[in-house]
Amino acid sequence: MVFPQVIAVFHGLYDVIGLPGNLLVIVTIIFESRFHVMRYILLASLALSDFLLLVLVNSFRIKSIAQEHWLYGQTMCYLNPFFVRYFYINTVLHLVAVSYDRYLAIVKSPLTYDGTITKTRVAFLSLIWIIPIPLSIGPFLGWGEYVYRQEGFFCEQGWALRSSSARRNMIIYPITTLVIPLLIIVFLNVSVYMAARRQVNVTEVQMGGSVDAENPQQLQEIVSRRIRDRKAAIDVAIIITAFLLCFLPGWIMGICRHFFPEINVPDEVVLATTCIFFLSSLCNPIIYSIRKKEFRAAIRKMLSRIGVCRLSDGDDNGKIVRFCANLESEGLSTTTVKLATRDLDGGCIYLETKGRSLPKFERSSLSPIEEISDY
Image (cartoon, rainbow, N blue to C red):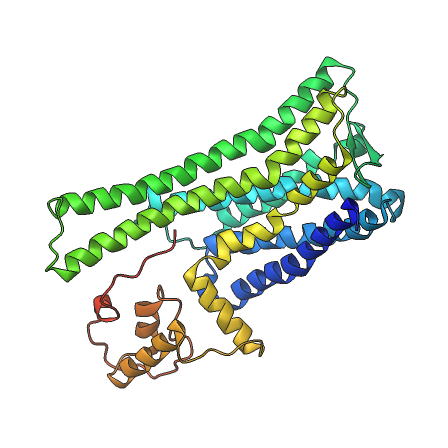
């Protein structure tokens, strides 16, 4: 098996893993009412973007790369790079929006931000899908042209760099669609990490800078906040690394080919960097959705509904449901139980009880260790 066929196998794996993965994220958010908040709506929209990228772009490249020539005619040769650019910009805007939503919820307005879906936020989400159109339609308006690249067995936008304005536009494009979004994402996510770090410092100062080993509650508070601090740092590192890994190699390769024609970029490099670009369609569901504990629990429940898997008694969610059943016998209404355990992976969603008197509920009675919230 030669190199193009190996790359075609990777493109095929992206479809096999990415299509059901992104679809599962979308379906889970649609059918779980507790995920009908802006944070998860953005994740569903991002998953839809990745899903369409795999269907409209990646799927057409699998067979073409395997057979080492374009198989789908001139029309698709034009549409394929258009969709590449459109969904790239769309994905970048989604990543910025997701980071900004986390920034609002944790740093800027932690006490007032509720993530409810408003008309303004719906309009904002619509812009994420509209803005990439004028930035991608250039060749149809005479700005550059679509050309077939034999070394990659696909079509792309070719740039005539004879004029200074064309060169200037070619420089502005990566700055506006790569550098600036990356800086925004770094700033927002580092701010989230710093907020988590400040929480740890404040807690330790309030406790006198020391932890009494004989005071379990004090020890649990310090441990939980340090775990939250570490998790925020890991999230920042993963988000930035994945962004650079997926998009930077393709940009470096493209800039070298356009601005330094004397540099002979090997065909294998062209195929490898374009293949890495599509890796983002697999990374996004894992980084922004499936890594979250409450989302994993929702996915397990969704899969159990369609018979793919079964929730065992050992699952955390099963423990919560059993615990809620005990609370029900003590007189708690369904509404109260749901509110009390909403941040514990959505337990109690199957309980249906009649309203009764509502005793005072203390969250600490659920577990001796504070639940670590997902950033």
